[in-house]
Amino acid sequence: MAEAHGPAARPAFERIPLERDSWYLDVGCGNGYSVRWAAERAPAGRATGIDVSLSMIERAKELSAELTNVEFLRTEFPEQALPEGRFDGIFSMEAFYYLDDLEGGLARVHDLLRPGGTFVCVVDYYAENTASHTWPKEVGVKMRLHSALGWKNRFEAAGLTVVEQGRIKLPPEVASAEWKTKQGSLLTVGRRAGA
Ligand SMILES: C[S@@+](CC[C@H](N)C(=O)[O-])C[C@H]1O[C@@H](n2cnc3c(N)ncnc32)[C@H](O)[C@@H]1O
Image 1: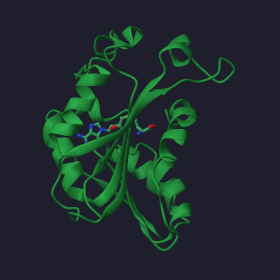
Image 2: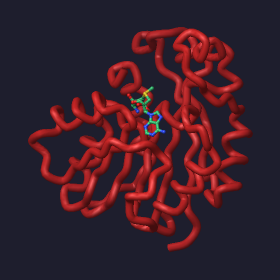
Image 3: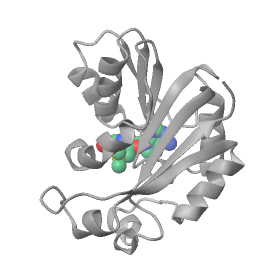
């Protein structure tokens, strides 16, 4: 999964300005690859990954054993344990459409960000990517389908200003499916007001 998402995830991750001492959070972190990227970028900061799957959190911990500035928590987002107003950057790749309460999740992201902090959200399952519409049936999991505008409106309703929205398309030699070159991944970048 991390290998499949990596080529689109990296340019999305780069949208988050991280300083040496920044705080970073990945929601639905999987094996924690982006948390390790952030730990390298912010050696004096704190990089946290959360995932509802225990096996994913265990794998993320294994792969990050040598890092001292990372933490992984098995928890279901939105959750209440993390400090509000503290994170400089929050990232989520292919996880937000799983949330039962998407609006509540976006509001929680807003509250966890420091004023001026950045949220980068990437989804491959979205209305304009018709190739993705069969996925919930194929994997037997409920997913919420929204258009790019639907995502933008929900960000704004949660108090996040959308500073960028677009598609991350891969070159054919890297893409594992045709939609990755044609439709691509939907990227939405939100910012909490202030600072
Ligand atoms: C498609 S995977 C993507 C994983 C990773 N972001 C990546 O790019 O490889 C979705 C992940 O989101 C997690 N997830 C789904 N709903 C969640 C929730 N409410 N809270 C935390 N994690 C969740 C799943 O356990 C899974 O690891």
